[in-house]
Image (cartoon, rainbow, N blue to C red; front, side, top):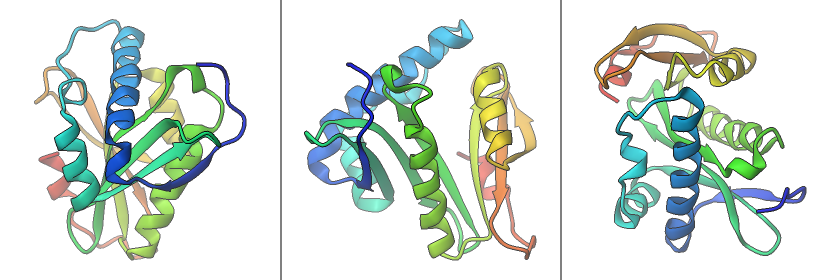
Amino acid sequence: MEKITEYYIRRASEEDATEIQIIMHAAFSGYLEDIGNTYKLHALTESTDDIISDIRDHAVFVAITPDGSVIGSIRIKKLTDDLAYIYRFGVHPSMKNAGVGSRLLAAAIDYCVGCRVKAVALHTNTKFFTLVRYYYGKRFFVHSTATDKGYIRALFVKELSADHNYDITPAFRE
């Protein structure tokens, strides 16, 4: 895939599921290569039916080229009235450092602000230094770490409200 400079962000439709699956496989395979691990990631085994279920039940955004190709996606689920969770966030490897991820993340955060959640959380591998720096740069902070998935992963949180009274524990199960 050549470097794309024009694209837009929109809510995903069920018709995007196959392309989202391809992007997730490319992005998360690259993720494993970058951290030098062979961990089993659920993002690499999900079916198009799983993706369609997420599109129906949660908020899924995609980055789309003018010709209609998906080049990235992000998913958000509301865990409580005060807390949302970002997952399956990936961009095609050929689009790294082109701003696609930042625009997808901004769309996700705007969605969360519109839902009036007080905070948004996500997990990432602590050894993926590029992502750790990226999330710090987007004003996320590390709340805690866990090893329940077979590696050290950090729970990052971004507060969206001056009211810091929210329960983060539902994100522990994600």
